[in-house]
Amino acid sequence: MNYLSGAPVVFLVEGWIILGISVVLLGVKAFAFVTSLLPSTEEYEAAGKLAKIAWVLILALGLLAQVVLIGFGPIHPIQLGFTVAALVFLADVRPAIAGLRRG
Image 1 (cartoon, rainbow, N blue to C red):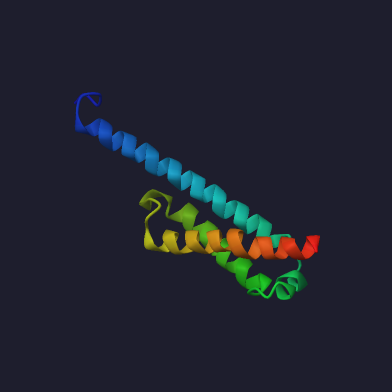
Image 2: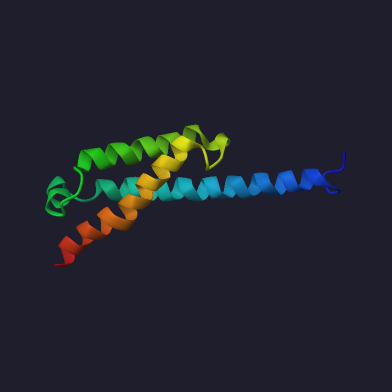
């Protein structure tokens, strides 16, 4: 079968796109996990956020799930939940802690 004539090319392109999205999400989760390790426990408490150990555990499990379930695509329910958690950390918790350092 010729993969350059017809529907199989669509599936090949789709597979590369899904792989690309999965790799980007892996990078986002790895970045969130590493940056969750840097602030002290007191900084999390001063910002009024969930405890450091909770965020580190959530983000570590998300990173692990991304690696283990990479073949299932980025819309697997477990991956979606952990992606939301990583994005919440990066959009809410990290800036709140950074604001304490500046102020």
